[in-house]
Image 1: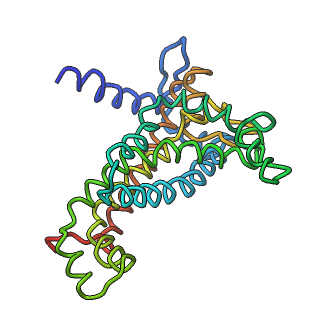
Image 2: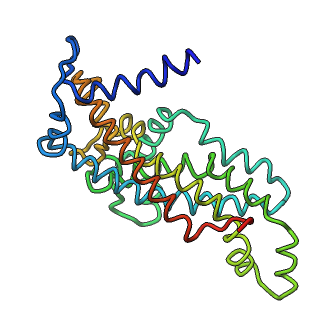
Length: 278
């Protein structure tokens, strides 16, 4: 209970109070009402662009991780020889620290000497992308790195658990009726997997909106602010400029965005999520 109060509830309450103050370190907080919120929406030149880039990343990341993890889980659920080994191999990237992943992919995506562009040149692409070194491709590079780390991780495991919960007699009945593999997947697997898809979708959206580590290590928000996400903006304001009051405001705005998106997903899920009890 003490740990919950000191390390979880306490910081939440404190940050909410600081969001209504002018608090710079060193110094003490001074209450200033909603000035910080007005500043965020009307005066901060990086707030709206960082939010737009965060949403752009989310649009790329969420479908990629949901579709990729689901297809991978289906492949690993075929009960073929060596499946356990393959599951371990695909899960390993999820265990690598985010900093190490960013450093590794920073080397792989190096425009001139990186192995990825060397391979692209070898197959005839004379001008491969500059990846993380170009403002036009940096965001997509960050998305690729995050997808590589996430597709085989917890999302895949949750899908795999859901697939193993689908009754085999339904597949057998569909096969007797003449349904091929695609129809069995479309009309048996997907409907029964919608609760799992919904759960993973909520987690994926939350994770995408909080993207930070890859951009912080691999690009530092650049080039030309191309990967300056909202979470990175919050970190910079708080721990480089030490404007803790305004950083708390931005953090609560991000928390509100997460709550709104989660609420929308819960409300709309009634239209497409099918539970066995229904």
